[in-house]
Image (cartoon, rainbow, N blue to C red; front, side, top):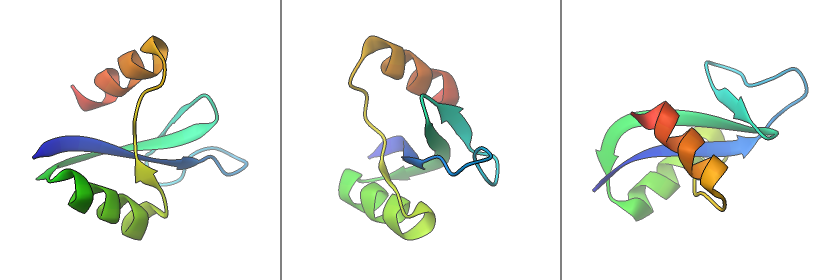
Length: 68
């Protein structure tokens, strides 16, 4: 089980409903423990997005900052 963040592309005008913008995407920390596949489904159903992942060290540091 994981704590997780969801992401989707930012609409013009910033992130709605308390999301955090990073490099043009909106991220939402979801303080719930879920299995990875369930977390991905929740991101898709709730935010029309995906489970966040990091491709660079800056992205990893950002994700850590919103989860911790």
